Length: 300
Image (cartoon, rainbow, N blue to C red):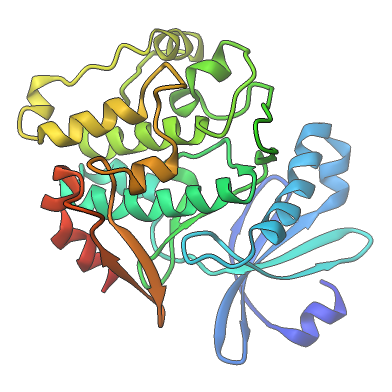
């Protein structure tokens, strides 16, 4: 640990350990944080792509600044061997753990998806595509506020600029990525659509036993709504999923369109005094209107 880090923060128990480092809990002026300590020697000795991802994350987090639905970077310390990122502490179960235990109601899924799309829209407005949105990277802080995390695969893009490279996780990656084509930031909206489907169904929309089978299913993009699950869910919800999981990128909604475009917009909201104050745009998407109570419950 650098002397500056130990001077500024009281380092507490270890929270987790990974390939390249350790996460500790830290206290400063009574506030709790997570310190992600990366061993640069291990990173540099392995895959150069891994090392690049480790260096990308702090740069991206600095660019994104402070946002209530993104894991924020509070401080950054570096010495010869380690990189230490002081981040928001997210000590509630992540979305992956939650979806493995049960399916979500429409109102619960609306609450999660609205916050996630606010995070994604913020990233896109600053020219950042996350490129690896999945339940594992959707965290929750002590107030049950959603925090989008793990920006190691993120990339900057300019207006009208395309990205390349097969990046992401098989179930959540968009078809244009699998096809090896250049792509834009709407790959994140596709991933969000997969997350929404899984929250409600308990299984992914494009399934396979192997990565190759999953990629084939993603490329076909044959979106189905099995009656055993979706008969009890609203037509408005299924319409929203079709807008997000649209293979034709030109017709796929952007994050801002999902949030704001009547009648398919989710609740808009502004953060005030640490809480999300919800307001409906127009009459709102019928699915979101019916889910208002659940969204307000999470905000409170």
